[in-house]
Structures are given as C-alpha cells and as structure tokens.
Amino acid sequence: MLDAGMAGFVLGFSLILAIGAQNAFVLRQGIRGEYVLPLVLTCAISDALLITAGVVGFGKLIASNLWALTLVRWGGAIFLIVYGATNFREAWLGGGKLDDKGRTANSLKGTIMTCLFLTWANPHVYLDTVIILGGISSQYQEAWAFGLGAAFSSFVFFFSLGFGARFLRPIFTNSLAWRVLDVFVGLTMWAIAASLLFGGK
Image 1 (cartoon, rainbow, N blue to C red):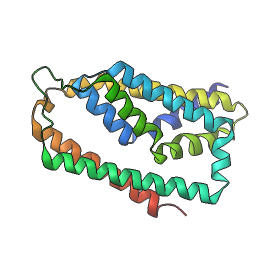
Image 2: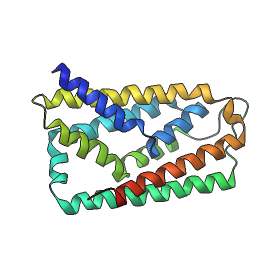
Image 3: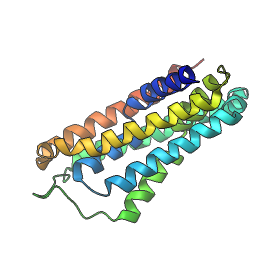
Image 4: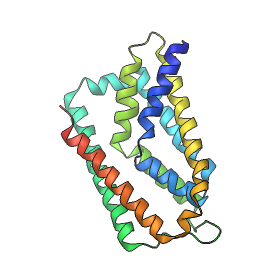
C-alpha cells in the first residue's frame, strides 16, 4: 500500500511539475496575492476528481479507443496553441505591472471561473490525470493507494506554488518581468502542443 501511494505521489508530482496553463495561472495569481487559498483548493480538488476518474477505469476506457485518444491529443494541442497565443498577446500589449501592494482588481468569481475553465476545458489535463495516472494505477493491486498518492501530490504542489509565488512579487512590480513571464509561458504552451501533435504514435 505504501509503495503504491509513494509511486502515485512521485509520478503525479513529476507530471504536474511541468508548467502548464493551470500552473501558469496559479503562479500569476500567487504573485499578485489574489484569492490564493480558494484558487489552489479549486485546482487540487479538480485534479483529485480527475485522478479518481482515471483510477476507477475511465483512463483505460479512453486509451483503448484510438479515436478518443486522438481527440484528446488534438484538442489539447489546439487549446495550448490558443492559450500560448494569448500569452504572446499579453506580452506584446504589456500592462501587467503590479501596484505597490502587489494586487490588481480581479474578482473572486472571475478568478475561480477562469481556473475551472483552464482545468476542465483543457484536454491535456485529461491526458496526465485520467489517462496516464489512471492507466498506470491499474498496474498496482492497491490502485486506490496509488490514486490517493497522486491526488495528495496535487495538493502539495498547488499549495507550494500558490503561496510560494509571493516571494517573486517584488520582481513583478516591473512590467518587463510580466512580459518575460508571458513569453516564457507562451513558448512552453506551444512546446507542449508540439509534443502532443508530433510526439504521439
């Protein structure tokens, strides 16, 4: 049981560690200091639900259907290309500078809705949580322990990212820092999209 749980934690953490649309949004909000607790809880609980779906069998079901897997791959790539382009647009326009208190005027509802969209409307998230983690969990006799470890890794990661980002706040009072971050995120999104389109079978 402990081995399965640790394996789930390590694999889950390694998959989520790579920056993605969801992670980039949490980083941005953490730097701003806006609604960090409800945001990280939304992300972690969403991941836990998706991982649970994978562990109970949805991951194997999707992976066994070539058309469904192809749909998820292409959908994820398109989503990431569009999101990356949005970041490039933000970098071009600028205007991301924080005020002296490190805050902007976004609403809690708007923040959570954006977070839910970036999580549940992003097919790439399903690849990591439902298909990969769900599929690998079936190799363990105690698949539930593997899933629990993977879900716990999401809580550890998002709380660390969201609350740790505040240490970067002094840097992001400069609008140039936001431009650099947006370009980096955009390039990363496009790199992940390319891996989905050209790295598959």
